[in-house]
Length: 349
Ligand code: AHM
Ligand code: MG
Image (cartoon, rainbow, N blue to C red; front, side, top):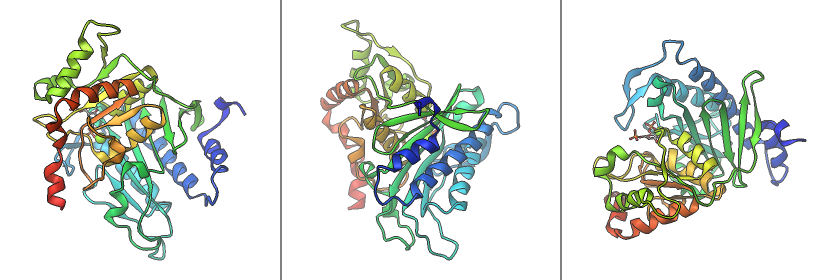
């Protein structure tokens, strides 16, 4: 079968054949995410037409304004996963606590937990700029049949079974890894199916795009300032191009195709960074590594960080391997800046 004729469903089934002891649970889980993504896609694309734009008047746990579509997307993903009883727990950027999913008879025999950012970059919706959904899947560590525990969610990113994102862009794509490379599927809206359009996606080893909110420059740590100066220098293949959408999924997607680095560092305004380890950085880091890229907090591999809380934030440097390495070289000159989460670790001890 030609790759372009392969749907996401068929692709998963074909690839499941390679795993022994498969129960079909994973296939059903991805198919639920796919379904929820199609529902959200429909709504996102109608956003200009219906009265769904604007802030809903609530704030999430981080005190940020939630847009109506955030709430909608959260509800759709939650309900789809809960109603189909295919996971035992869910944690979402939009929920204060994780959700335990009970089975019909109060027991739940499922082994996966899902963590997600249902609609990332939602401040872009009002201006018709691409947004995305990010998800991350782990096998629970507590016994099957018992209620899930926080430790099922606070696993290192290197334990992820699968991760992916949906970008609601000029076309809608679902990009997925289950630890065997990264594949991109484009939604054919006429038929409602995702087709394999970008098999085996890879970051170019090096790139010429840097993506960062430079408006925060004065608040950045010195290592980041030095790296930015390096990007702007007239030398060798530099200056690089600056491209920042302000929508992680879209910035990542472009950089994976063209070669580049995305940075959301610590700053005096956000001393631990802005992005969340569990809902944003870990899944994107898993995808990046599976696509020959790299992801770091400036000093260490994102996927090795031991999470201490659900809504933990970390600085994020992600993209083409050589660019991330270079940024780390600049950061290494300021080792004291690696201690951004020390106080939190001390509190946990
Ligand atoms: P969100 O989860 O509240 O949407 O925030 C995450 C987003 C990322 O998609 C994006 O890269 C970043 O925040 C933009 O932040 P800023 O406006 O500070 O540059
Ligand atoms: Mg987000």
